[in-house]
Image (cartoon, rainbow, N blue to C red; front, side, top):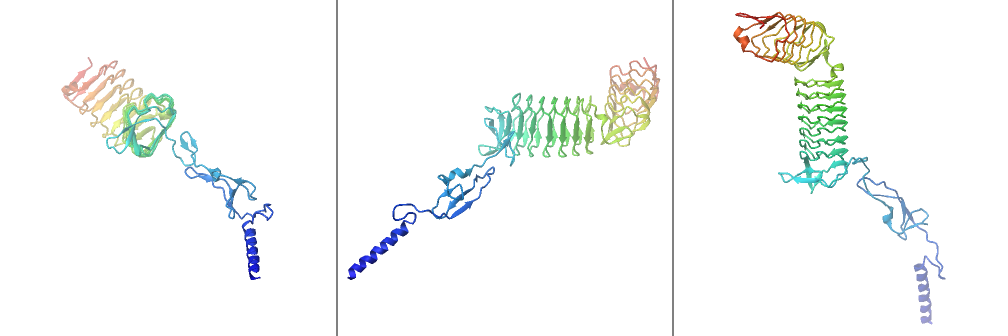
Length: 450
């Protein structure tokens, strides 16, 4: 009896265990409805460097994943919910984070320090939008060799990252389709003729790290319309923007102290220029063949001064004018064609008078050059048809070509030195062509025109 009772109890326990183990099914083989315990996984937007995912649900009971809250659509592979990370590039730059899509195929050379590389040349790269990489072989790319991309006519844009510190001479010379360039903030040197004859280049910003603009850096960039030069730049080299005939505006920072010969010569469309107050020297022909005088700032009584230099006088200048004390040089073309200027006073601080400085001043009747002046340039008084007398000190050692040519009524040259000293002055060709029958009055006698 006891044994039979034991069998009955064991049988009941076995049945209960089966029922619990088959909770998803009934005893007759028919599946029962599972009640999911859903947990929502929110959608995450992918970034440039981190993966994202679509929205989905996970059941904490059965461990399955679903694309809907009701658990009707099972996700077999959870990887299908992943949204890959990635940049969105526009012209080689990520529009989201600014990362660069570097160009592949460029040739590199290991630098002498064996700790960095330079771009040697374009190599097998076929990109039209060149992006210089930050690294090569796990070492930084710090420079671009001279002539690295010379005459690469297919290049349309260049982005130079912040790892680069120098751009070599003629690095992009002759890249005729190069329209835009971004220069990294750590570039300190841009070589001579670096962008020589890049005819499609339209604008350029020189970063704060650059100290100087070298010889003919942007020579012949005939589409260049706008240039901004930062305060870090201290000098603008000979012919730096020579022949940039579309350049209309130029801003020169306060750090610039010298603008060298021909710097903006031939910029025939240049009508607006802002020059910082640090400039103390302007080279010969620096603004030759430009229209800049129509809109220059800091004019005083019709004459522009920068540092200690007289740069230009408006042709409308009339009557008498006194150049301010402290002026060192009367620059080339300074008072050219001031037809109504009758008298000018030159201070003792002036040491030289440039080419064509008073040419065409047809109302100027007389002039005294102070003892401080050492040299007088070429064509300085050419065409001064009302000039009757001039006083020249014995400090002058040279008089340029065609100095008094066409000064048709000149009668007296007062020279403070002796006749021997006058004859020793280095005089240019045609210095006294087509003048009046003048007399040179020296301290020990007179010399008549031959």
